[in-house]
Image 1 (cartoon, rainbow, N blue to C red):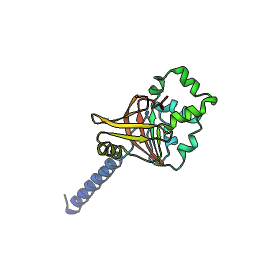
Image 2 (image 1 turned 120 degrees about the vertical axis):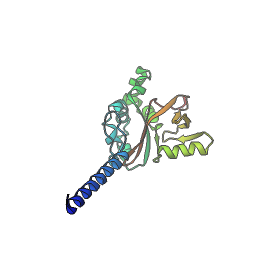
Image 3 (image 1 turned 135 degrees about the horizontal axis):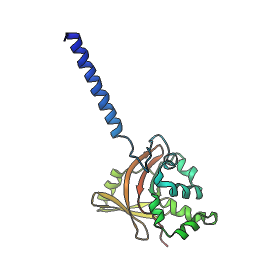
Image 4 (image 1 turned 60 degrees about the vertical axis):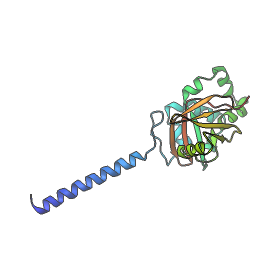
Length: 190
């Protein structure tokens, strides 16, 4: 092997390693998949949510409540987005009632109990939980207060009725905030 061939081989190996490291780094920082769909940090909450197979009921409810424009706006927002199975666990007659136009105000209240008027990543929320001695109140745009705490190494939210939701996928970055996927619909006090 000549000196120039050796240098070319070493340079090619170094470039391959650098490209591989850059690829790994860019994918390590990528958003998690949600509902079988890639989530893009440069898209807004609505643009991403409509692609998640796990959030079809949430998207239908947001549409029925007239919140699409709000959640597509500049924000920033944190959305605790319940999956379809969370909505399926509700009384289906009550859910069907909520989706009727005459119950738009009640549906809007429930949905905005899942929205915070700032972007809060899970590490920041965890820090607030720790700073507050293990439990942190999270005021929402729906005038509900969710209580955040740790259950093991996972963050949970408790609504005003005592229902507990687990954050199953955290820190899904959006152009106008962040989504945390949860497994329970949060409800306001009765």
